[in-house]
Image 1 (tube, rainbow, N blue to C red):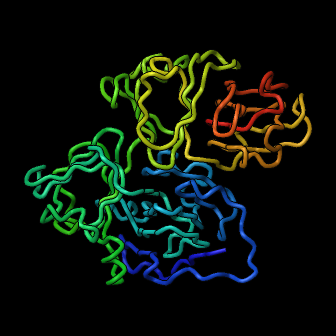
Image 2 (tube, rainbow, N blue to C red):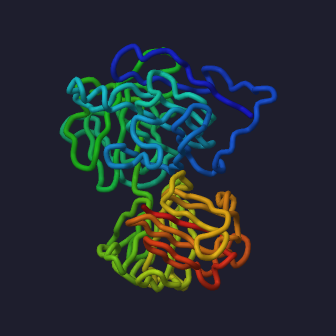
Image 3 (cartoon, helix red, strand yellow):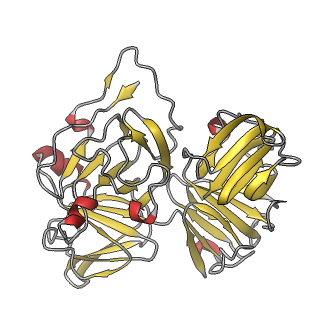
Length: 417
């Protein structure tokens, strides 16, 4: 097992951006150490409530996650102690509470920037204080954020989609400075005055600020002309009623979104023709949404990227979208190997659980289930490797049988709290 350990130096001042990169020392093997049981590395970030990748856990895809909005899921705010970051991703973890207590303008306290690796402690005075996580992959096309070289949205401009943009990588070189910005609906941006390269080379803390949707005529006195990192987060899923994301569009976060429950009003029921799925997220798109419990129509599982549905059975036929970045601990759903809520069981939080995540009860073994108040779940079988077979929607309550054809055939679960 390879573990990258955090530096345990205290943050020198407020707004400290403390980098953790390979430049600060390659991970070293720990002889004889058992490999921890963690979700598959396809999840961009898995955060843990205990050190050494233990305790409650939550998987995250690309995006900005705020504890105040319930964004830190099963782990929760002021509770993260260790992290696993997948290859190709970086994570900015920040404490907002300390900054707010002294009426800081930008609302961010100490931050750390994590490269890919396993971190058995977050360090930097951030243990059990993280309230904002920003997960970014390589830059994507799009217009989620526009940064300007002058105040009040004037001067030269650069348009950024979700992802990370660093001065050291030449991403900002067309502007002499970043002094204002606009953020599109459904997006957020975190700006810092040190990217991986400069912070590592100098060892000095940096300033960070988070910006929500809207126009921002200034980046603030501390960042004016000093921005070296722009991290952009967008919606998990964008659905549109036209090709190439044209026409009426609607964004979706993690959860189960049903036309029958009024969740698809903006884009429309049986109207979706294209979808964009953010890095690290998955969406289960299904036809024939009904009042649960009920068997759904044809379903397709889609990964990251833009998906054109023209010529497929789901074009203008989607009634349900189940969105998630991966598994989480919790007891939102309890599944049982036998009917009548009996036999071996496994508990699941809100998230997506593939065959390998169904421990306790096991793959192709579920016969009955219990869902917590307010929860919804979609269970699916595998028709063949990599494909989704029959799916069924369940709502809160006890279900003494999952019914045919899912009995002892369930290999995929989406759970929404």
